[in-house]
Amino acid sequence: MSEPIVSMQDLKYRYRGQKGFALEEINLTLNPGEFLMLMGPSEAGKSTLAATINGLIPHFHMGKLEGDVVVMNRNTKDHSVAQMAELVGMVFQDFEAQLFSTNVELEVAFGPENFAVPREEIKDRIDENLSYVGLEGFRNRPPSTLSGGQKQNLAIASVLALKPQVLVMDEPTTDLDPISKMGVFEITHRLCKRDDLTLLIVEHETEEALFADRIALLNKGRLIKVGPTREILSDVALMESLGVMPLGIPRFFKSVGVSEVPLTPDEGVEVFKSLKLQVNESAYNDMLVKEKADLEKLNDPLIQCRDLSHTYAGEVEALKQVNMEIHRGDMVAIIGQNGSGKTTLAKHFNGLLLPTEGEILVNGKPTRDQGIFSLGKSVGYVFQNPDHQIFSEKVYDEVAFSPRIRKLSEEEVNQRVLEALAAVGLEGQEEEDPFTLTKSGRQRVAVASVLASSPDVLILDEPTTGLDYSEQRSMMNMVRRLNENGSTIIFITHHMWVVAEYAKRAFVMKDGNVILEGTAREVFSQGETLRDAFLRPPHFVEFSHRLGYTFLTPEEMKACLEGVHN
Image (cartoon, rainbow, N blue to C red; front, side):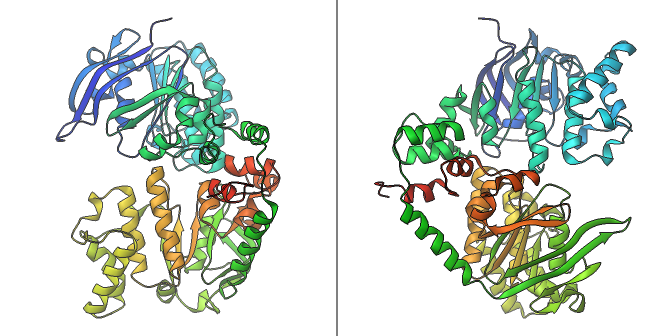
């Protein structure tokens, strides 16, 4: 057995000014050529652990480090970040912050130039790594003009150009759309086959963990379990208890009493057939009939788009003759890759944008006749980043802002604030400073501040971005309760499992057009059209589809099995 390339022994770390340790008693090794995925809930210490490998801790982030991190016989305590950079490459969660050159080629050249690599070799490294990440045609482009996925690929290329022995990537796909995520993961899948590179990736996307050799689960600064990928992903109960998203396929098979669970759609089909499991056709059809009947009750149009087109200054046609209706009481997902027109469309619903051509009606009246102040009463908008929306020093004042500017009495303002905070689970936190809350907490404050104006429609732009699995569940369960209590919900998301489990209907956008609409089940059954829009159903839906059905959740499928009693 070869020597570990990275070794952490009795590692403890506390940030300066903090009482508790961010990392405690970490003992972990990485072997040459291994791919280790690090997973855990928010605040688990994942990014902190990643920062110890290249010496950012202890040399850049101030604090108290105990124990040792050794990379190829170099102890990070005794070597600077620059010295560790010869061995360890790091791609940060905020990858845009590590891009600063005026064009793509210079960005990739920067690291090797600083290590005095000969000019001819630098040229070879630029060519090799731009080709590797699919950016060879962009070498003269300023990084600022690239898409999110292309910027992430450039950050990866610039780190690979240093020829590191160890590559650390901290949540490389956060905020990327499905196609960009697939692009980054496609690169990581190729990287993990290289025997000259050891890979540690911090990630929330459990489906991508299937490609790792091992998974380390971290919680509250401690390693809970480290083991082979199959062993960890099969332990559904452990993952759920830590707030890490379990895969749907093992979740289903565990629920019907299978101990050796399959992980992928291919394996799932094989095990399903070998166990001679059967779907009860009449139970499946009853479920479809009920779904159809429930949707037919939603027949009161609240938002209507009629040949809606929008062209931004500079002649960028973002929407092209969109026709759609959203009904009172609906819960609708708008999905598609970045740049497909999702946010542009949603901003028409509350008058933030007005049609270039065609019209949009809210409550039967054209938006251009209503004005943004009036529309704001009936259509509430929660932005992707809650920090762009929050400005008060107290949660109470933030939520009270909208009712106050509408000149409601303080008594009614108080009632609306308390009701809105109760709806989002923030009762008793009226006096808190919103900016001291977690991202999930700030997201809830933003939702409450919109709810306080009692809108007919609530629009949420990427409500689950930057949240861990349990926070995502909690946020979407709250949104579902609002819908059950009468709110019409429109949400934009890149998370397909959120669409599968929470949307009544979905609209798929591509290049400014709605190319597919229907129930979540109908949309996910159209695999080819989804692929054209650079989307893909969750693994579990894909697995059920291969059996001739479209189930959205493991619970649905279990309820329709022959001879299985819930």
